[in-house]
Structures are given as C-alpha cells and as structure tokens.
Length: 368
Image 1 (tube, rainbow, N blue to C red):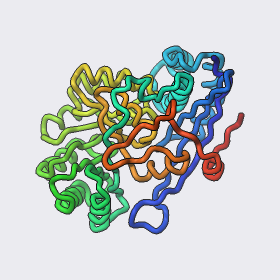
Image 2: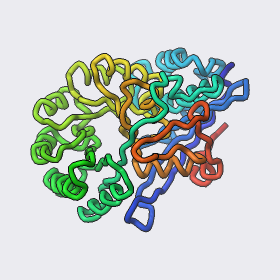
Image 3: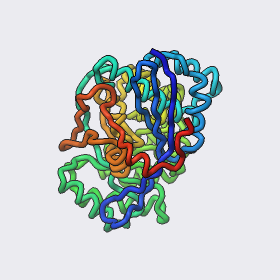
Image 4: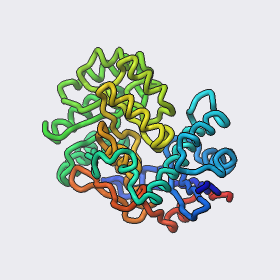
C-alpha cells in the first residue's frame, strides 16, 4: 500500500459558547485527507493560533513530494524523511503542524486496515478516558464566569478549567476570578487554570501564592515560552501542580521539562506535536519518570485515543469551542458520557467528515 495523494483545506468556524446569543469564539483548522492506492483514505487535523494557509500549501506540495509512494503504516519512515528533507534543524511551526495532520491520517488508515481503533493500536489500555471541560473564557466578566461554572456543574461536570493571564486587572483579578469560581462550585469539583504562556515568573508566583488554598488540580502553561528552568523554579515555590506541552513540536522539548523537573503533568497534543508517532515517544519518557500525560490544547476527538490507549494517559480536554467545532465537522462523533468519553468502536479514529460543513466553512480550498 502506498500514499498516492494528499488533500488539505483550511476552515474557519464561528462557535457559540454558553451565555452569549451569538458566536464569540472563532476556530481555524486544517483538514487533511491522505489517499492510498488501495482506496483507503485517512483523515487528519491540526488547528489553533497558526498559519493555516501555509500548512495547506506545505501538505499538498512539500509533504506530498516527500511521502508519495511510502506506506502510510510506516510512520517512523515518514517522520525520518520529513525530518531530513523538510526541517532537520527543529520540528516546530508549520512543519510540526502539517506533520501532525499527516501522521494522524496515517494512523487512521492503519486502524481501518487492521480493523482496530487508534487507541487499540497505541496499546489499548482502555476504551474510555476521563474528561474535563474548559468553560472559563476571558470574555466572561466575573459574574458570567461564575454562572457558566454553575451551569456546567448542574449538568453533571466534575472537572472544570478556566483561562487566566489575559485580564486587564492582572494576576490580582485572576485571583478574584479563581476564588469566586471555587466558592461557587464547592470543594468537590476539580478546578484547573490555563495561562497560555501569558505570565512572567513574578506574576505567576504572585498568583500561585494568592490561590493556593483553592486546591487546583493544575496550573497549565503559566510562563512565557514554557521556559523549562523558570517552570522548575516556579514548581519549587508552589504546591499547585504544573502542566504544559500542548504546542511543543518535538520529544526533545519534553525531555528538557523532565531534565529540569519542570512539570507534574506533560501535555502532548497529537494535533500539534507531530501526531501519534511523536506522542508515543513523549508518553514513554513520561511513564519512565512516573509522570501522567493529559490533553491540553483541545481537539478531544483525536487526543482521546492517546489518553485511552496508553497506561499513563489521563484527562481529555473538552474545550467547549473545540468540542462544538468537532461536532460540526464530523458526523456523530464521541461525546462525553458523564465525566468520561468512550472511544468509538469504529476502526481508526472512528470519524466521518461532514462534507457539507467542510464546504460551508472553507477559507483555503484544496488545490489538488
């Protein structure tokens, strides 16, 4: 079996969030389809704050030139050729994102051929994974934030994450928001916060000191550039567990986190960091150091296979905006059942693209 074609397209999706009448969150993704001479097609995805048009061009031109004629099941060979022919200096940016979409599609093909889910191919530890819900958007004022949290708890959600690091009031306002949510949801609901790289070390330290009694499950990506040494310094200063890694593009960055004792939880995301192939290596390193991996950066329909398939796989992020995007772009995808999500019994990723939705949301069509 050989790869004979790649089609990629960029899409923009405006998605609703609770308490707002109109969509206020926009997501951009690249949808990737890998074709084989046997007729099997695999589907991949990447998305986030990135260069979607460039990823489309890279996949349909440079990547196809490199991988055409290769067996999609030979993912190590694919990664090696991409490394040496497209970006041997460092696996970041457009190359990492494009490789993620390609790799995901290749694992989807392998699963379909073998009649197994990607979670089973990765190791088959479980056919489900625990979830958490990212509900706390910066657009909410403090009263809306509390209302949104209570709305989730009333629906049965036991694990919540909110965004910090972007309020005009600085870390002091973030502290007030975190304390307000903790008081509203009570002590039995897990609460996580995510700064998306936005804090300086001093501001992150001040915030940690002010909310340590809120019993947070983790503080995600608190510091500029995920600086491994600065994260290690912060970790020594606080009782709050630290998590990071969703946008890192190679195993070497995760090794740096481990070497510096920077984190309590590693967060590889298959849609950003090179796909399942690279994530397996990160998960193996983490397991050797008794570290869990958890999904940060959203895209639960793909990352649930990692968290279910691997022994140290932990939480899947159902970010409300990305969950809505997935439910638009795919037909009847897996949805949370209580506080877990089950892997579809269909082979591969178990996802069927919604062609009409892809057509309606396209901003960069496939050139092939």
